[in-house]
Image 1 (cartoon, rainbow, N blue to C red):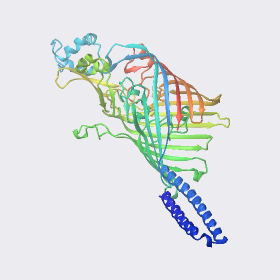
Image 2 (image 1 turned 120 degrees about the horizontal axis):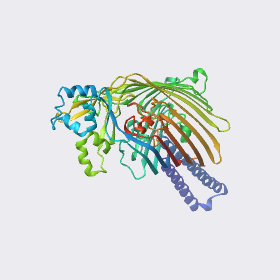
Image 3 (image 1 turned 90 degrees about the vertical axis):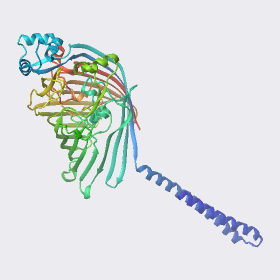
Length: 580
């Protein structure tokens, strides 16, 4: 619009000057020297006006363009990565704990039919399990004992080349002087795979709301973050933020990512997407301590009714609510000290999600379907899963300190604590850090004996702890980093969205060592060479469901696990990241 007006004004002035000049030509003989000077001055004024209009147009166009672009700012990063993954002594030794006192009482009462009737459920079960029949007849089945579901298998697995691509688009918009919006869209995929569903061979492969950003899914963008910040409410240091929270890649995990602090909470305790709100207060305005902020955070990790068939009236799970405090005690650009304490109320024995049901588990739990699956041995049926019961509450706390020295050396130390407070309930894979006890019962047609979880083996509180230390030092063309973390038997942080393919290293119940070299190609592009070594001590890393078993015992065959167990593993990888 401004450009059009300036053109019209300029044309009008030029037409006026032209008409005036023609009149001068007609009467040029009568013009004196003073009139000629006036014409020259008028022409110069016209040139000056045109120059000034051009300058105004340029400034107005730039301001209009700047104002339009300021409504939303888009930045991002692109990473391509190749891994070489190697697993040692991968053991599958599945079994369930069965209450054989209950089984014996029901069998002796004739509830399962007569053992000498070949068509009775009891006779069919004994015929299919001759060792079980012998033990039962000899009176050896008493108390809670393992009921082995499949022969033990042990193998090493090598995935020599595994490629991934990650694209993240950051969105920012200034809504008002003290209100802003931020979001992040993420794509994370394997090369040659956009199915979005993985075969359920570990808890890492279970795709759910909280882990979508760190779990390879497909060539589509997911909303990893979307929230607004309302700062300086009524002129105070108070602020409010609501939406899909920035709860991934928090301190001190940003060092291994070679980026700025990515999330609010401690990355040692939380790397998990959730929806909620944060109320914060900048204490530095009162205490004078730079960067001191206290936050109360609330969120919902699971919706139990909507979408779960609630109209049938058989919902037994509950919504999982999260709440707690996150405090930046010091954050002055060189020193960072953070405290975290929060809890999760009414934790269920799983989440809503999708998975491809393993053929191996179908043979055990869905024998009728397994008969058809054998005709298509490479087919797995995709199912939407949801939890079956509330198993208890969880509490997490931690303290972390990081320092950036004047010589660019960066180091950190972090300690974490978790507590699982079970309520005695259990689903198919167990209760809160405990296994389920199964009881035998007849199916709906009274034709088969099936085992159903009845209760948790234990219901006492279980405490876990984890430590995480690291250092990053300048090196030729970039920087070198060394990190180590350890998790105890019951260590259960919420870091399942960490995108390590073997599994979140910070959720590991055992030891993990990592070394990396980052080469800075330019200020917005770098190459990272890294290696991670996992030494798992206990099973079930990353999940509160089921009793952690000693990995050595599972490998030896004296302990059991419903999912394959890894003893040791290593990941050698190289990545190229571009920020734009």
